[in-house]
Image (tube, rainbow, N blue to C red; front, side, top):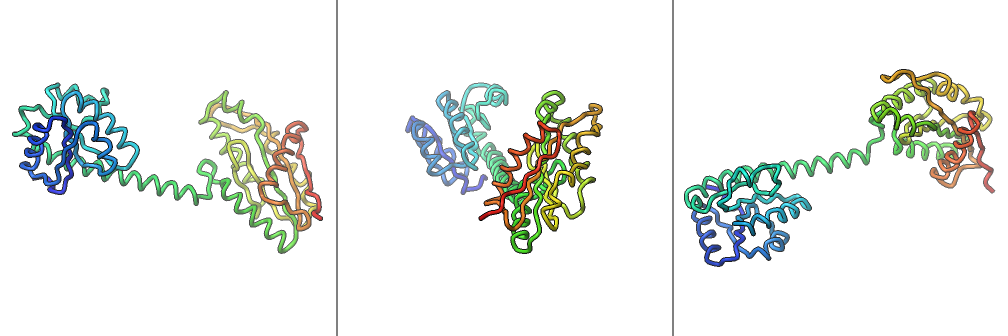
Amino acid sequence: MPNPNLSVVVVQDDPAKAEQRVALLKQAGCQHVTHCRHTDALARQEQQPASLMLLEGPTGLALASQVRQFDEMGEHYTWILLVSDQPAAQLLDESADLGIDDVLAPHALADQLPARLLAAERLYNTVQRLRQENSLLRQNIASLEQRNLVDSLTGLGNARYLGQKLTDCLRQVQARGGALCYLLIGLQNADSLQREHGSDFYDELLQGVARRLQQMVRPLDILGRLDDQHFVLLTLPPDLQECAPSSFKRLHDGLNLKAFITANGSVQVVAGISLIGADSHSLPDSPQALFEEARTLLDESYDSGLVSAKRLPVRG
């Protein structure tokens, strides 16, 4: 006997047939059984979703796809049992995508309905549990992504990590003095390389660039990947004199003068580096303002083939 709390709705425009179907369902062990007309079915599902819906004929078949669309909008799943003389294999064909879970011939209702209800209850509970678990999993993934500070491709810090570290660096310079060097490292030919060789190659190349940068920076420097074309390096020298292009020429040469070995062979990147220097007297209005300065300056580095540098002006 099925769970008596299983909610069932009979969708039937003929009152006499509706009463017969309701009587059969209650006789099979279902206590929460109601019925409604086809025109009211979707509104009823929205107000009080049923676990199982008993439909019949072509009108019921047309309603099934609408119920499925309604299910997609929420976390509920409706088990649909169609009463029809059509072959079950045709109606349940996955390629037909009719939204039907089970088919029962009208003449077999009295004999087979109890067993079909038991199967429907078990499968409905399984599907509903999986949908709820999937929803919880998506929420957990979204929560982890919001807190994640690591770029999964390169193992470096991601944009969120860089934002937090940049804020910390600005506070440190303001409180303790010293200077901040903000380096925006861009790959000028990133788009052309990705178009020519594909995404898998480009991911491999980004990993290679990240490894080479890690080898060239100092242990206390902060390195991260900002996006698909940019890396950021933050350093905290004792004064602005060290925020000079000559201090980071090795980085520029290391990316541009030595090819990267990939599965597609040897590849040359065209990298540019913009350098923004600031101290406690010339801090930017916001971290975003610092990025905008560096982004504008990066084009100069692409054009000149050198590290482009700028010191922020002293604030009055």
